[in-house]
Length: 336
Ligand SMILES: [Zn+2]
Image 1 (cartoon, protein in one colour):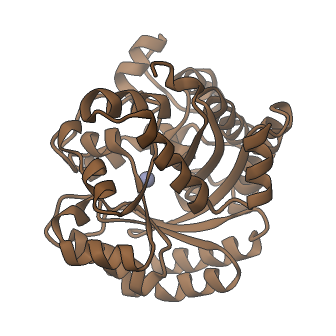
Image 2 (tube, helix red, strand yellow):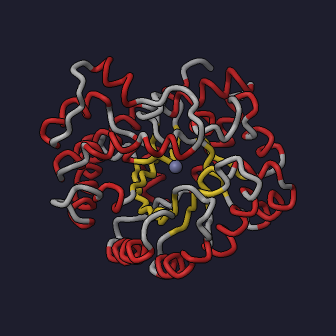
């Protein structure tokens, strides 16, 4: 099959803040009070996007600030949420889980607060799903980051619980080294009790402790899904543990190359993990900032790792089973 764009897809791992059209950044920079110091789309693409591997995750995360800076008012945030859904739909995505970190968006934007940010995102998503006639099911995930003050994480947990009707899940993101899962247990217990589902960014960076981090994310934080988790390939015991807990990995191959979590796509463990019986899904992570979309991930896995239509069907089936979005909404969007 050559046209993967029209293949019906599920995206479980996509950051709103990493998925802003470059044209939109150019359009709204003035309104957001951001001096881009460049005139043309080409110049901005050069400056904003990460198209080749960086040193590590931190270097990649630092690049997010330009994208973050334009998220300065509710109308821009709403537009970005809307465009995320429209872009996903044209990428063949029929079930989309979109995640964002309220504290990250709020940073240096004093006129915003978490409720205003959330209302803007929900509004943008509603507008898109209405326009698309319900042909896409969208769920929102709230993120806390490891490096934020714990009081802020605590506040974010309360915020997620207050909005539990419009969030489907809760996530922990950022660098893992130096941040113990044990300090976040309380927040995850609370949000889980309120009915939110749990996914945790873990086992992404190529460090010796990575498989153990994944084990702790499952044991201590109750993760049902792991964002990335690819480094478990180096630890047979953790692979068995992940399987025994029926945990699903949200793999993002191009992202892993860009953050230097793997050397290249050919050495990505996605196929090996599938063959070992680990439940995995395929995702784009930050489609615009990385200059990719989910269709691109299909194409590169076909080219570099020989993935077949059957492999993609397996990945899609796992994602449909693992999504946190209400099954009736999913079914309705999938069958339209
Ligand atoms: Zn991510």
